[in-house]
Image (cartoon, rainbow, N blue to C red; front, top):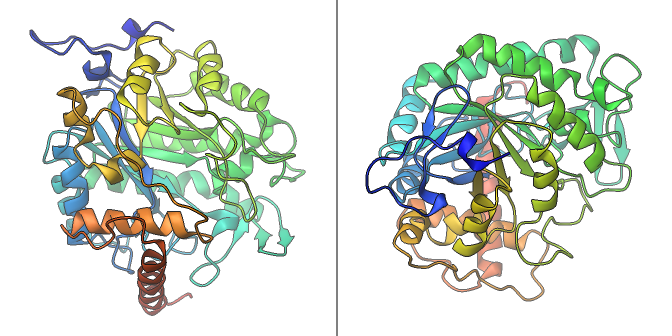
Length: 409
């Protein structure tokens, strides 16, 4: 699909670099450029599901740094199914004033702030929630029970309520998280969805609940509010979601009211390979994005493996996707978008870790986000051991707060 289909009118003197042309979404919203901060699990909420000053500061810096959109990872609509104790929880018990402040601060620099609507499903942290997925699992490092039919039927209303609360609080849009092995991704994957009812079997049945959620969210927020979705090109697991089935899902999304499809891949299931392993340089899922382009006229956002401005510009100029999603680059240089616009820091210097401990790299980047938010610099260099210690202590304290606040745990 040609780039011009999505390009909004540029003002006189607008940058000629395609990365810095506006992007008009089907709902009518216009993004100021093509560089978006993809969702990361920042884990900066206070343990009761509410935003913190540090979280507001972090997203303000990314907006002021030029990002068209920043997406807050794993915002739960049901506190029983969190990915981590640092997740936000937006439900009928939430203090909307605190969320409204986060929305204001996170858009202060002119970029949009979207909430990624999540549900961890079988990946729910068992220390603070109840792992439940499409089908029961009993694995050495992962176990969960199957959702009942009435629990599945309640999911569209759950996501719709959270999306409407996000809109009321002043956020710019929402993204449905259907990637990386969390609940909606679990429904799409034949490895984790072995149901024999209307929500299991063929890809058409496995995608049904996701499409119902899209429809419910659109009905709740109206036609002009951006709704994005993050999907897997592949689970990268034997027996998991294949690219063939993922493309069928893309074709189905073409008929929906989705405004933006973010393409990623991989899962966080125990033992699953990291997305970055055994791949060449450049965008991991560019080939899939090119195939998806022939299946839909929806704007596509490509995420994963994009490390330099040249790589990002090529993706847009060649029509592989309409936007690029960066995550770790924003953790290294919060103002990376503005620097790229000026032709500076075009290849951020990512840290290199030798034989990192399990979870060490994730801990380092997670703590790096806190460092940015609090204007600190305690993690300079490759100090993974210190990052793991600090990260583990913080997660434990937030889990304690979570268990005290949510009385069902």
